[in-house]
Length: 225
Figure 1 (cartoon, helix red, strand yellow):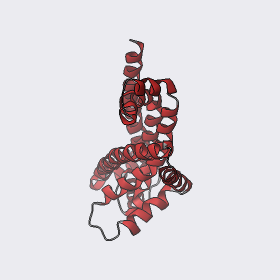
Figure 2 (tube, rainbow, N blue to C red):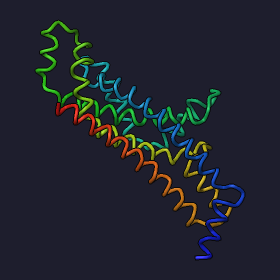
Figure 3 (tube, rainbow, N blue to C red):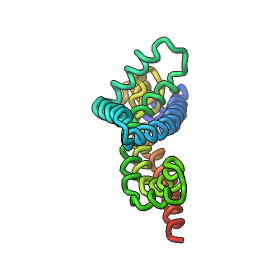
Figure 4 (cartoon, rainbow, N blue to C red):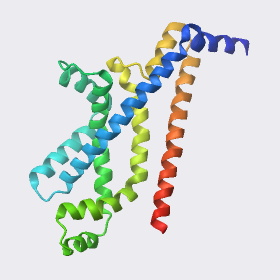
């Protein structure tokens, strides 16, 4: 027990090393939130392309989804950081968020596409018969219903995204995982830093899961009225 206490002090208290983890939490949250925004926007756009009756948008959407889903996220991150944004002066965490947003967009697009296809075609026909345009029908009738159906899947994608950001250390960002690795290298102790990072990720995801579950319950109650 005394040895564990000594290791804990050495890993987290000495030289205020716990501040590295706190800073890493901030980086992880920033990257994840911005990536979610990018992912939803890109996902909506690609879903519309995949659902289009025109060949060119459908081709673009299909190629994007196929390439992004078929390559590792760490490879995409390094290409976007070291190639596409190599000569651009922009914060590292923003570039990382763009990379994860691009990756998430491919998965979100399939979630949205499936949600829209799950809505009965009669809803679209009813909207058009009332004089609404295709865009108005989609935005006012179909999408609001689809959102309720796909909300759990989108929540799961957000949770997965938070865990995927653990690779941002490849581009020099000090996130939770990178902070744990730094402490491990400085103290030559592996157990405490690794367990510490695992606990932090678990707590973050648990809080997010509970918050999203409450939102989902409210959506269900609204449907029951």
